[in-house]
Image 1 (cartoon, helix red, strand yellow):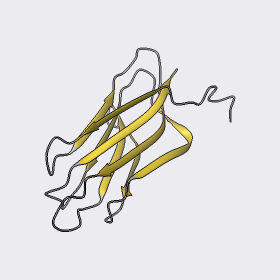
Image 2: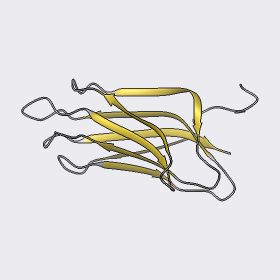
Image 3: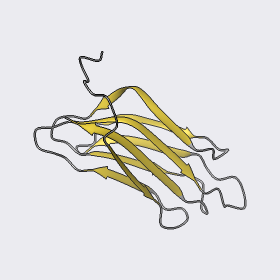
Length: 121
C-alpha cells in the first residue's frame, strides 16, 4: 500500500473549538485545484463542565459536495478524548475541500474541540 500513498505523513493540522456551550464545531481544509486532501487522523474532546454527563460527540467527515467519508461517535458519553488514526488515509476527491463537523446532541452546557490532520497531493 505504500506505493498508493507515498509519504503518508501528516503535513498539516486544522483545529477549532466551539465558542460557547452547546455550539457545534466545523473544521474546513480549503480545496486546492488539481490536488486531493488525505486525512490521516481526527480527534475530538470536550470540556465536560456540565452538571450532568454531556452527550456523546458525533463526528462527520465530508467533502465540499456533501459526500461522507466517515461518520461515528468517537467520544462516548464518558466524554473521554478520542484520537483516531486511519490505517490508510481517507482520500478526498480531487479539487474538493474537506469538512469535519462535530455535534453533541443532548448536551447544552459542554464545549467541543475537533482536530484533523493530513497531507495534500
